[in-house]
Amino acid sequence: MRLAISTGGGDAPGLNAVIRAATLSAISRGWTVLGIKRGYAGLLGEDEVIPLTADSVRGIAHLGGTILRTTNRGNPFSFPRQQPDGSWKDFDRSDELIANARNLGIEAMIAIGGDGSLEIAQRLVDKGMRIVGVPKTIDNDVSGTVVTFGFDTAVQTAIEAIDKLHTTAESHDRVMVLEVMGRDAGFIALHAGLSGSADVVLIPEIPWKVENVSKAIMDRDKLGRKFAIVVVAEGATDESGAASIIGESMAGQNRRVGGIAQQLASTLQSMTGKECRSMVLGHLQRGGMPTGYDRFLATRFGGAAAQAVADGRWGHMVALQPPDIVMVPIVEVLSQLKRVDPRHDVVQTARAVGISFGD
Ligand code: F6P
Image: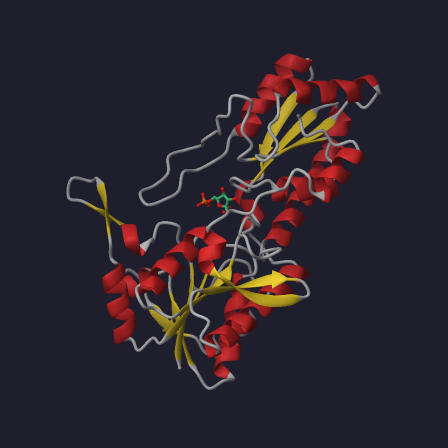
C-alpha cells in the first residue's frame, strides 16, 4: 500500500500528532507513506510530495503547526490562478490532481481537515479516489464527532487570556472585551468564558442585544463589582444581524470574520460611561504546543485513520463518540455544521452561575 497524507485549511494544534500516528501505524503495516505539502498543492505541482518515514515524524507530536504545511486557498475544484492582468480566476484542477496521484502510485489518502477540506475529500471520493478523513478544527464545529483536536488547546489559550485580563481589568475598573475565534460556532467562547469566570459571553447561536450587555455590566457595578469581562465569539452577530468583517480575503479564501470586540467596546463605553477596552486573541489560539488531551485525541485519530484505510472505509471520517473512535460517512458530516445548542447543560450552568448571554 502506498498511502498519502495531507493537511488542509487552517492549522490546529495536534496536526503533527495525527501525521506521526498515521505514519507510524502505516509503516508498522509495511506500507509506504508520502506527505503532500500544503493541502493538495503538492499534487498540483505547486509544492512537493515528500516521503514520510519513521525518522521524519520523530519528535513532532508535541509541536504546533503541521510539518506538511497547509493552505486555505488550495481547493483543487476552484484553484485560484493569477491572470496576466493581475486579476484572479478559479480553475477546476481535480482531474490533474487525480492523474498526478495515480502517476505517483498513491493508492489511498488520509485527508486531515475541517469542513472545507472534508468537502473536497468527498468530491474526490466521488471521482474515484480512496480517501479517509480526519476532522480538524479549533472551532469544534464538525458534526459527527464530540470534539476535534485543537479545540482544547484553543480554549486553554483563551482561558489564560481571560485570567490575565481579570487582574488588569479589576485594577483599573475597566470592562475588557475579549474576542475569540470560532467562525459560526460559539464553542470556544462558551467553554473559555465558563471556565474563566467571564461575566458576559456572546455567541452566534444566542441572539443578543447590546442593551442587555450594558445592563449586566451596570448590575455588577451596583454591587460594587466595578470591572467586567465580556467574551465575544468573532462570529457573534449584533442585534442587526450583521457579522463584522475584518480585512480583505485573498483569492480562493473564505470571508474573514472579526472585529466585533472593538465595535462592542466602543458602544458599551458610550452606554455605560465605563472605560471599555477590547482585545482580539486571534491566531494565538491556533499556535503553540497542543495540550495533552489534544495530543492524545490526535494520536487516536491518526491510528484509527490508518485502520480505516486497512478496512477500505473510503468517504468516511474518524470521529470521537466516547468511549470509542467510530467511522462516520463524510456526506453526513457535511450536511450539518455543529453549533452550540442553547439548551445544552453548559449554557444552563453558565446562566446559573450568573453569566449573561445578552439575550
Ligand atoms: O476555522 C478555524 C479558524 O481559526 C476560525 O476560527 C477563524 O475564523 C479562521 O480559521 C481564520 O482563518 P485564517 O487564519 O485563514 O484567517
